[in-house]
Length: 415
Image 1 (cartoon, rainbow, N blue to C red):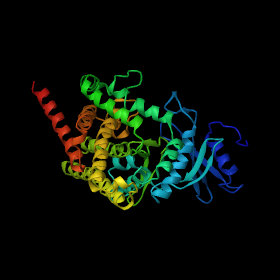
Image 2: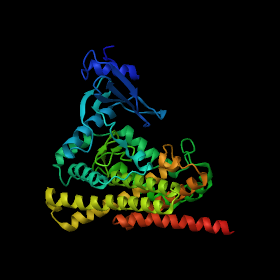
Image 3: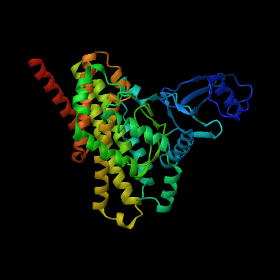
Image 4: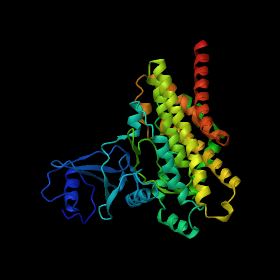
């Protein structure tokens, strides 16, 4: 087993591979298990049982794990490896260290983060993350602003656009996020049965909504604004009360900045909906919701403040040396973020890839209500995205959607 020809590894293969590549001593007693819970790749944790030292090996197969129908280039793992290296340069300490890339086996090795927790799980467990807002907004600004035409030499940026072209994974996003949830794609959509009729009427049947989604889709496909992560949800972030580490940038390409910001916001809204539906004690529920609302608003507001500070400090284009230009640019990012947050809310409820925040709500009536609150939020964020100018606007939209849903339920009960 020389690993000179590609094949999808099993755990025992990954252990031999780690030894073969020199990550462990030849006589080390290694254990390995596959820990990937995503939809696309294979992730192995290889551990030396004597020393406790461990590494992660991530491998790309030629089809997605979620479905053999998704045939995607293995070059995505090269993109992910290079992106993590770039993150370590632009935003040190906010992503795992990477050690090695293998273009034969289509895999790379990186730092083991098993001392941390996937953020989605941490939020479901009601853990407070006091540094998350500062960490994630620093990550967003450092990785996004400094890959725009505002900060980069134009020729350098165009060379990077070419290097990070990512058509296979962009196609997945274009289908699963921008198209199928709004067009009754029965082949792959998977709505919760109690909400199917509501979704058919309020989402599939809304032509004005589809027009706005189309505008957002064309923007995603044509606007090479910055080198975005492309899949920045709470399942792609490791956390504890002190640390934040962003992982999984295989969907990276040059696209609209709002795609990354909006995904973070939407996934915090999923956590809000889970807490709202599952915490029985009123005071505890109110306290958790307040913290999540502050976090949602904080992401939007601190991102804006830090982006403008970076602009004032490092904008290189002569036309950028105008505060009004900077503020207009950032306000458009915030509007885009609102639209994308709406898309992410809708696709995780209607489409193929759901989130545990919602699927773990055991009571079917509470789950159905939580989904409708988020889908009403999604429509308001998409249709009125330019009205969202700061963090408070996002929170108010979420609360307004809840009020509308509860009024609708009350009206139905009274009939």
